[in-house]
Image (cartoon, rainbow, N blue to C red; front, side, top):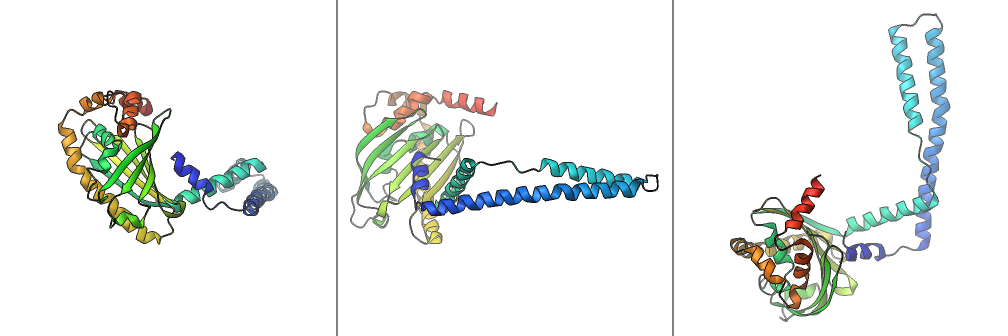
Length: 307
C-alpha cells in the first residue's frame, strides 16, 4: 500500500486508548476461551478412546467395525492434539488488533476497482502516467482546463520517487470544485516499475487516492488495474458511480494518445528524457534511471519474480 494512504489509514479517526484496550481484552478473552475448550476436549477424547477400547476387547475378539471405530477415534484424538491454540503475548495481540483495524479502515476507504487489457506497450502507459503535462493536454476536457502551476518538491526513493506539484482549477465553473480547492498540491508517487499513485487533497483534510498498477503482458499489450480510495463523507454508492464515470472518461481520453505513442519509437523518448531539464518530467527521468531506457530491467525483475 502507498505511503500516503497507509499513513492516512492509521491516523484517520484515531480511536481512544480505551477502545484499543477493550479490543485487546476481548481478543485475549477469545484466545483464553479457545485454550479452555481445547483442554476440556482432551479428557473427553481420552474417555471416548478408553470406552471404545474396553468395548472392543471385552469379548477378546476384534471385528472389522470395532477396528474402524478405534482407528477413527485415535485419528480425531491426535488431530485434536495438533489443534492446540498457539500462546499469544499481549504485544502480539495488540499488533493483530492494529492490523485488523488497518485492514478495516482500508476496506472502508476503498471505492472502486477497474481492470483493463490495453493493446499498447507497457512503456507507453508509464510514459503517460509520469508526465505531468498530460494532465493539461490529454485530459483537457475531463479536467476542464486544469493547469499545472509548478513543481514544489521532488524526492527520489529507493524504487521510485515522489513529486509534489501545484495545480489550478482555472475555470470558475469547473466541476472539480465540488471536490477540492481551486489551488492544491498534488502528490504523484512512483512506488515500483509497476505502481504509480496519484493523491489529490479535497476539502477538510480528506483525499482521493488513485493507484495505478500497470503490468506488461507482452511487447504489445499490458494490463492496467485502477484502484480508487477516499475518505470523503459522501454516500458511498453515489461516490462510486461518479468515480467509475470519471475513471472511464479519463481512460477514454488516454486511448488515442496511447495509440499514437505505440506508433512512435517509445524507447527513443525514454533516451531523450535523460537530457530533459523540465521539472514536470523529473519522476519519469527517475524511472529511466532506475529501470532503463528500454525497460530491460523491468523484464529482468519479471524473470526473477517468476522464478
